Image (cartoon, rainbow over all chains, first blue to last red; front, side):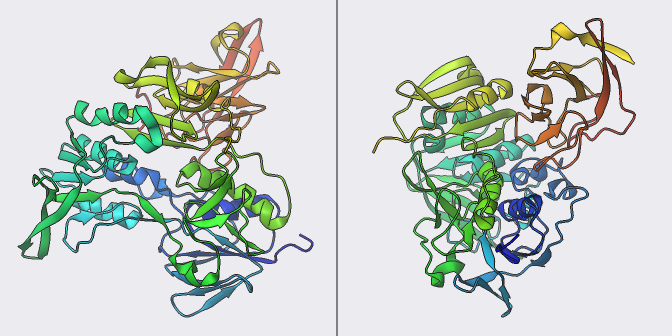
Length: 393
Length: 116
């Protein structure tokens, strides 16, 4: 790699960081890769944490993101948080007081689950493997579960807990759940809760979490809502979104307005510093602005583009339409495209009310997004025909 | 070697799920009119590769887009990390015959041999 970096420091050892390291090796990069991870674990897959891992069908070994015979030849620095970045010298400071210096830096520190202010036992968020283990240990037979937030993580946890035979209530502050990601189909998808024996209460924000003293400390007993009503609960799962894990970049001078600002190829304003994954807000040519996404597929697929940016090559295939999936109540949801509001929808196959359908979102005559409910074959055909024209300002 | 289907049963550029084998297999017919056979179930999660997107000599899983090599069953990138088995295919007089691999299949968590 003439003139390319000799050492690449990857901050973040989850999907985006790992995919970037793989892409570096795949591109023939034979220099040093230093992988820094705050969690003590090797790269693992997060989507099963709210589903199969929580229910026990997926094991720790199943979660690995590393190929069976994969050897990236990287130096792993795990269980250590990055605390600062000097973009000019490509130096990353670590919580243990040491520094890691390279010729280029990949920022892939992901996102952090939003929390409610509480120190009560029995209150969970779900982002990491350790979060999932703690929640799993609390989902005991007979436990009453209250999920705060009817987004995808909340819905998947509710679905898993209901399948385990637990009594589950979901409370959502917004009047229409999933309206952001799914538009008019949000309430249709959210109706899966009631049809599977889970109570969903919308439009009622949480006032506070209530607890009582137990032998081992204060533990949650319920969720008080702003209308004065209360949901009794032994376990509370807070699924109210995530924020970019960019606090550690505060002194770097990089643009962190909503995630690390990057151009449409992952470059930041600092030479030799790229951003990938949940923490980054790439410029989206369709939206005409920076846009942070937390989708699994983007974290994987953008890694190759970011590596092109680092190495000055152009080998990556064009990024596919943004997409995500969710499995809940036995229904496989798949979505691709961009919703900007005011799209019209058509049902191209099946019936959304029966949770088996292919729904297309239109802006004018352009198909701009597609939702599949249990229609993987059709979904993939529509996904490839979506328009990705810039939206007129 | 067992007869699996007729060549006409498989649309060019698509796959056909065969449930008469254990585990189910997928027969693919490329746009170049070549036939391949893999285990049908993705090694990551219970998805039918016959529903996947065919491009050249690869099929992309319809759920999470790991792609598998039609010739070898090798997988390219996560979320799947284990290969599917590739089966030997012979096309004769408009019929597709397959010799099933004797390797141990890699089935996804929660899926067992013989499960429907």
